[in-house]
Length: 110
Image (cartoon, helix red, strand yellow):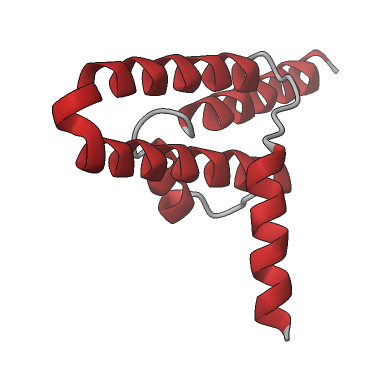
């Protein structure tokens, strides 16, 4: 009985680590490629991590000469905040991204 409890705790910690890793730059891309069993929660964190990284990259390409350091600080803070929430097993919801995904998928179905 004790071994089962320890094993469940190990699985739970590894899931938390995977969710947290999605907010490390390129961590979500690597997890998407490597991970064989993707839970819906992990896919959500992967989606948010990729969107965050793409937005950061676009902002850096377009505005690096003027606001590069500020863009980096905002990206680092948002990544850290989402990383912390994922690790603490809090619900991470970004409605703007979810709404855009629903609109895009809805148009694709037509």
